[in-house]
Length: 81
Length: 396
Image 1 (cartoon, helix red, strand yellow):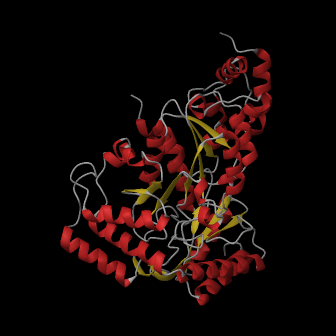
Image 2: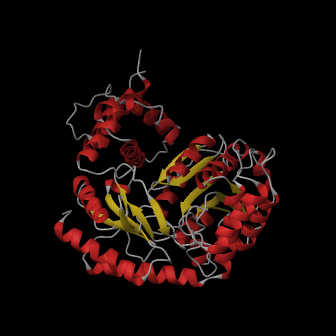
């Protein structure tokens, strides 16, 4: 299943402040590996995604999510729930 | 073949950079400990201002005598877990004494403070439950939450409004546990407990307070933050440690729930590890009795904390919290400056903790002091003066 493009675009926007190395962000970007950000940054970033969409993304789900596309699918699923 | 240690090369490189600055801040060796506030480090007598020895009780003659007697009478170790051969009468006596001190019906003792959080959190919450934890929680809380298998939701530090918002989004049907700390170890700030209790009354959940840094320290009875602000009845479970104000090693969980004792048979970090050694239990028991009998230690700690806090403020240092606390954290501009300042403090006979990201909130670089009731006024003044010289020279 492809990640919804609008959610991917929004996540890219929310992720930019953490993208210190100027990596080109796409749905395939592996967030922890390619952005070289630590676990605290990832948790802080996910909080911002939760607040933007007014949804709950438990840390357990975050730990199983690697790419921007993975996270966009989680957002899409939880928005419907 | 993938080398399993390859993933740690970044850590090794960071450690190498620190060593190139001339320090091994995370592997410092105390050659001798002279008193609760003095030691020998790198061949130099040093004021200890980063040991969490809040009550200065580690060299108390009665505690030492109790430990020595217990070792002579019961041996060096228990060689078993609490549910096998490792429960001695003194473990039960310490649990009863702590329950009295805390004014709780039940108390369970653990081998370390870290295991107390692992045990309590994994015993209380399960895969169908949700734990809401403060973003700045200690690692033992994060690890305990992970061990529980519960759904984990993080809320912004000390922000009851943010917790309220996240509870409103809740999807789960299971139980809900909210975890806060009395005093946060890095910045020394307290949880706004009344705000969290208001959210509890709105949403309904069980509330656990980790009083690791506030047990023995805060409140008219020394029971922690909830005692200080008069909200103990709203706290369902208390966790604490013996490695700070009690001056030993171990931890506890306490509460009034009628099924509390059942946790003994549901907490793997309690069941599958050796129980505390006789000497450690005996010194803890003696120390808890002293916390109850000698409130002047708390008064002295409060006075010393205020003296250091006000002295640092007068130097113009930016601190972790605006409230007087036994944890006084000085914010530093960047990692190299922090390391150089830490090294300069040590060379000038003052030991404090160095705290760097990602182990700190908001990527802060900190020189973290912890105050002891045993510090003399002269020692506090020397810490302040040394900081003044080091800050003026920025590490020289």
